[in-house]
Every structure is written in structure tokens, then in C-alpha cells.
Length: 190
Image (cartoon, rainbow, N blue to C red; front, top):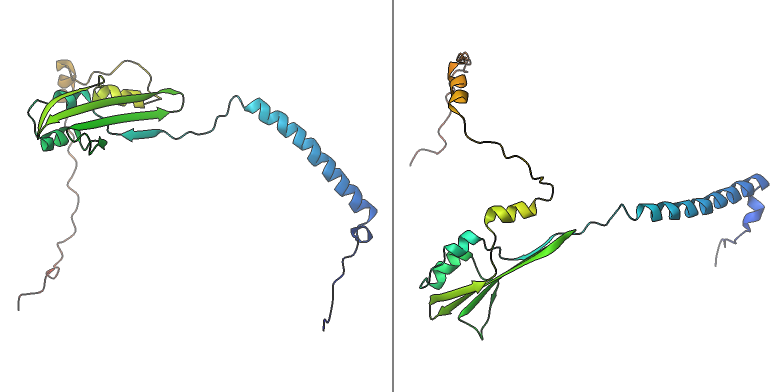
């Protein structure tokens, strides 16, 4: 039935004394490396931290948006100013909740909440946390930003005068290739 059945041969018959010695040395060096690797990882544990994803949930509502709210605005007008609410409830149809959370590594989590109350289709009032302006919020996002001197973005009269007194450089007109005659993009009407 079977033409050939393989039998396992002991490994010691095939390995010479030198090969066994090399395998033993490799095993010893591997074990020694494990000990030094453990020491290395324990020394590096304080300086290397795992990456943690920034978690942003909800609708960011800025101070400028809240200042745009007025009593008597319709639901659609409020939605255009603040966006779609994060939470609406069947049991509280006259209440919209705007919740925003931001969790980042090494920074205290931010959480803000704004609740808008309606009477019928008109906004009655709103209440919630003090919202940051858009500029303040963006400044909290930039981890690498260092407070420093902000450059002046206006040109003084002396600066403008220096640009006007500089000789105007005119570049020669580039040689244009001759206009090619292309067929029309659309076929003629039939």
C-alpha cells in the first residue's frame, strides 16, 4: 500500500560535535540577550509612552455662535447657527443638547455643554457652560505652539515707501507657441 514511510532519525546522529557546540553557544547568547533586553526595556519604560488617539466627540460650539442666538428664533435658524444637536429626546421635544468633549494624552479632558429650550417652534432661552471663542479653542489644540511675540501684520509708511522706491523689474514676455487650430468639442447640430 505505502511505497515509502519516513521514519524520524535522532538528531544527534546527523550533527557533529562542532555543530552541537555552535548550537549550545547560540542558546547561551540568546538567553544572555534576553536578560539585557529586559534591563533595556525597564530603563526605556519611563521615556517611551504608547500613542493615544485624540478623541473628539460632539459639536464644538463657539462663543461667537452663542452670541448669535436670539429668543424667538425658529428651530431651523438655531440649527443654522449651532448645527445639528448631538442629543434630542422624544420625551423632551422642546430641548436640544449640544455636548462637546475632547480627550488628549497629557491634557485635562475638555467637556462643554449647551442646552437650548424651545416653546413650540421658537427658541425661548439657552443655558450652559461658558464657551471659548474659536481662536481660544484653536490655541488649545496646538500642542506645539509656544507663546511668543506675534508679528505685526501691518506695513508702516516707511516700509511701504521702501517698496515704492525700488526699481521695477520687468520680465521679457515669454515666446508663446503659435495658436493651434483644434476641432470643436461638440459635434455640429444635425
